Image 1 (cartoon, rainbow, N blue to C red):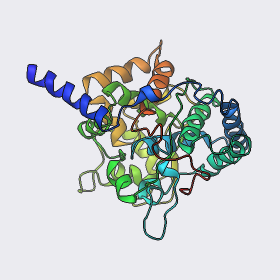
Image 2 (image 1 turned 30 degrees about the vertical axis):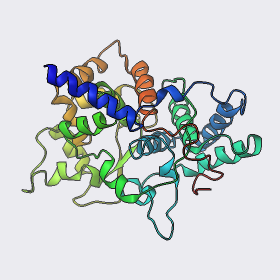
Image 3 (image 1 turned 180 degrees about the vertical axis):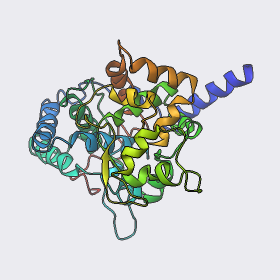
Image 4 (image 1 turned 90 degrees about the horizontal axis):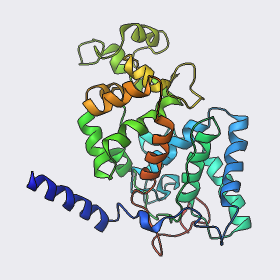
Length: 323
């Protein structure tokens, strides 16, 4: 027991040394003197986008996730590839990302009012919050002060992002390495209450789960039958809603689906295999849900991962290019 306690303390210390945990350098109201209208400007860009495309909230939330899980929340997912380097944006998991124009619109407006002041990483964190709140989801206070990274590498996105195929052990390891708890894992998984997925992300569960032409026994058979009417074997183009019927509404339906073995991904169904995450799923699918409050807390936790502050990194003039 003493050895485990020592290891836990050492891991936390190492994370601090390596810059994975630097929350003391972020603060609510960071731009109150240098760019007091930053939150209103970002929110307007997000609201304008969602008003014309109600499906845009999920991509903006997903983009923030994908940014923070690779090199921390430094805006590196926004960078374009160069002649000498393929960026995170070009990784297979990121090819379906969209909403870059929303971040660019916010950045352009901010550069006119507060040139060289607000980072793309902070814009992305605010946009994710606003996207959720504008579709009747929770809101939370976003700590700001991130600076933008100058490096974006395709291979890192390929290896560091969680996948729809991950089991609980893999997810726990991935999240834990970034300082996120098991509760953060199950709460942030709730982001799947909005958005769509391509069939190939779960098609194996329908047609060839173990390589023998079988179905995943952990998925409800009736749900599999429904999905098969939309997704053919080896379908790489069709998309389906992750939370059927309310894919543009932020709610607790995701947990109800998971509890009924109707989570779309292996990474969803695996939440029922761990005692702690299973208890959370069942609690949120019943009355008295704490999901909205919990989601805000976990998003703040995620937003602290690997941030660059002070004189680190830069404040990009355009989010797709280093200065």
